Length: 444
Ligand code: HSE
Image 1 (spheres, helix red, strand yellow):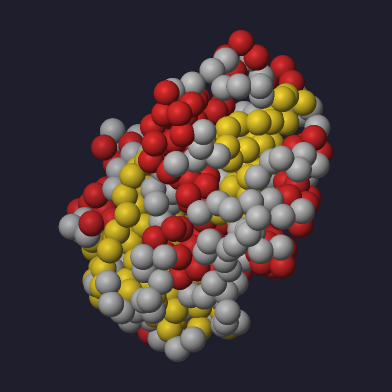
Image 2 (tube, helix red, strand yellow):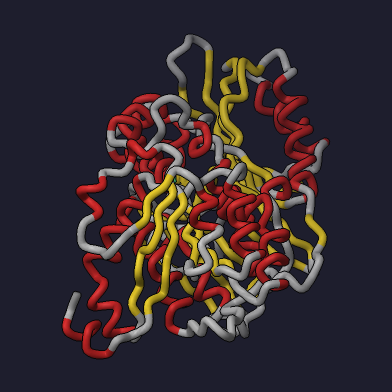
């Protein structure tokens, strides 16, 4: 223990960690390494008092040296029922049983810090109600963007702004895959394999990242705060990146675009549109420069204007940095006898959602067609009948004999009209296959 801590006899804030995996062990190391530094900064001593981990084999007790008297058990109840615990750090992940742990902690007047995006995106409303009822708070900076501060800034520094647009690249795995497809000329499967080898994508089931689920959870969390209205996972439209081909990446580059998996939240006339999908974005837009596993969140607020947060969106050290940041926020103002809400829930409105069918976007469409006179006219006729206006068209010869690749960029079009035209075009006998349909976001 440092002289500072001994001399000042500063107050202990007791932490109980539930779930001791990869992130939690880094939270533990961070607190151990930075304990004296933090004590000097915040005039409180962050003390890990208890750890609960169902699988005790995950805990190597010898590596827990350096903090005093940590009680370790396999039961979360030991943390939840310990009256001396001030802050419960939930790092179990998933909804069940994490929901019960967090709800019980809040209901018994403990603060909670979590990195759990599934929990917040699905059950955030109930948990904030429990926090408010008990005059404590639930902080979750690490649930979006790993080490990037974005939840705190949205809830405090940017609180005075009306935010009508939030656009994130919030999944490092997919951003890595798309970057490698572009830079190393890899197919989707090859880039996914590389991401799995490096531990970015799960080996057995990478679908949470590549199908857009992870980004959709994060968008639900961000949009709830940005638009002051609860957005849950089920409200978010999602498409992943499994359909993005090397041809799409090359075609996009040739036209001055790069393909990114975007999480887009827009509020217009009190209606919220929330969608996760790959998109062609202008190669010179700042979001196009976000590469590999990095994340960024771009926000437009009526006073701040444009702003963007950028950094490491995953990994144990960045995530632990955010978890401990939340602990510090609570600890700075901590008064055991007079608890209080730090940010609280900001969802005071109940806005409607715009259906994806009614959303307006530009589209990139790649199709393989028979190369003979009159084909283009027949395709153009279908687009015209469905009120889809074409901005540009390029023909590229494909390998197959008598087959041509047609690339269309549409003007802004209502999504349901585009879907109908793609269905009709797919049925034309001169169209071999509609290979890709990807939105284009000019982000201007
Ligand atoms: N799997 C996520 C990503 C990190 O690839 O960004 C955790 O949310």
